[in-house]
Length: 487
Image (cartoon, rainbow, N blue to C red; front, side):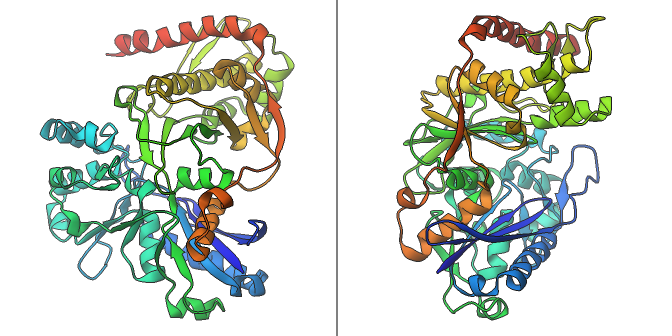
C-alpha cells in the first residue's frame, strides 16, 4: 500500500508518494500562477490556480508511477496558512483569496482587540494582519456586498480538500492560525467569530490532522487508477506539516528553518502562549499536542537581497564570509526588510546596517546579514523560553542550512547543538503523506513520524560565546533606538 502527500504552496503544488515504511517512492510538482499585488502591501491569488496545479502534479505522478499511485490508501494535505478563501452558498469563490503575507488589515487588528479584550487569551496569539480573521474584518468594512454573500470561509488546503472530497473540513493546526480558534480547547470560539460578524455555520468542521476528514471522490479515484474509499486525512498547516515530516512531534523537539522566512518551531505537550513576545502558539497536527513558533519574515531572503544588491550569488557571499570569519564583525544588520513578527510584531519595521567603515566589504556585509538573522533567531528563542518552553533538540532545514558558517553561528548563539539531517525531503508533502498513512491505517503518529538519520551535529563554539553575547546586546539595543528615530 502507498500514501500520497499533497503540499499546496503559493508558487505551486508538490505531490509525494511513500510506502508503508515511509520511504519516498516518487514525487511531482506543478507551478501555480504567482500571487498578485493589486496595491502595496496586498497579496492575492486565485484558488483555482492551486487546484489546477494539484491536478497537474498528481496527473504527472500517474504518468511516472502508475502502479504506486494505484495502490494509494490514504491522502494527506498540507498548505500555506492564514489565507482567506471566501465561498458563496454554492461553494462559488466570491473573490481572490487574501494570502498570509497580505498586510492590509492592520487597522482591523486593533479594532478586533479593542472590541474583545480577551482575544489574545482565547486565541493565544496577537491579532496580526497575516491571520485570517482580520482579513474578513477588512472585507466586512470595505467590500460589504461580498461579505453578505459569505457562506463559508476556508483556508487554502481546505479548499483543495473540498474539491477532492466534497467536504468542508479543516485540521486543528491550520485552524489555529485563523484567530477564530480557542486554541486550548481545540474548538471554534463563538466570541472570536462574533467579532468579525460570523458564526459556526461559516466555519468548516474540525478534525485532528491524523484523522479521516473525508473520502476521495469516485471521479478522481478513477482518474488516477485508485481503489474506492481512499481516505483523506485532516492534514496540517505548512509548518506543522514540515514538523510531521521531520518527526518533531514530541515535547521539546523542533526545527530551525532557514528558508525565505525563518522559523523556530517547537512541539509542546500543552498550550503555552506568549503574546507579549509575539510567539505563535498553535495546535499541532496530531491530537493532544501543541506547538510554538518564532517567525522571522526575512531569513535567507536577507542574503538574497544582498545578492541582488552586490550581483554575487548567495553561495558566493556565504563562502566569502566563511573564508574570512574570525568572530563577530563591527557591522550589525537588522533583518527587518519586510517588517518583523517575533518578537516585535511590527509590519512597518525596516532593516538597517550599522557600523560600516572603509574596511567593510561584501564578505563582511554577508557575515553581518547572517549574524543579524541569527540574532533574530536568538530573539525567538528568548521569548519561547519566556513562555516556559524547553527546547531539547533542533534540526536544521531550509536552503540556508547548506552554509556551515550559518549553522555554526546559530548553534553558538542559541547555545545548543543543531542537528543536520541527511539529504532528503522533510517538507510538508512528507508530513502530509505520513498523516494520510495514520488516517488510513489507524497508526499512531508516534510510530510513523520518526526523525531522519543525522548527517552531522554542529556544536556551539564556546570560545565565541561571550563575544556574541556582547554583540547580541548591541543588536537588541538598536531596534528601539532606530524605531524612535524613525517615528
